[in-house]
Picture 1: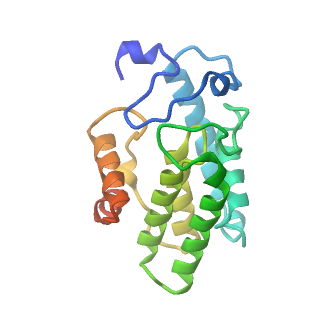
Picture 2: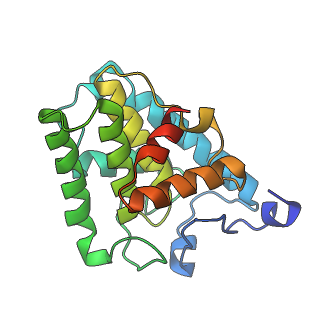
Length: 203
């Protein structure tokens, strides 16, 4: 991230979703720079991960559900955005149309449950396919990729699988070669080629 981007709190990274002025006004803490925003968001995401990875949380029967997905997003971003946990109400440069979001998310989780029930794919591929579908729908004003990756991690952990690594824990929010590979693998998955995304999630 260069100096100019660091001092523009709402600067867009490649592939990021722009926020409307109304959505920007829903920022809770008093922040000035993008670096500060990223740091506060990371703190909330880490807290949500700790909560989600507890044995009691992983044993929840509603793990793959619309309600759980909302709760997870709320826990990730509730200290940052007032709209945390609420689906977006504005159209974006990518993602499904607003009226289809709730149905799309519910179907994505239903697909994952069915794939697990019938062993349609190995565990990692079920998680990666769920991640991709959530990113494709783009249900939130922001934080879609981070929410989808954590949701995939939770699914794998709930089945005692080998954890996914997503570019060896690289910062996928900032511009760079690893983020570029991640975005390229998502675009390949848009064409139903999940090999690159699966490879990236394990790298």
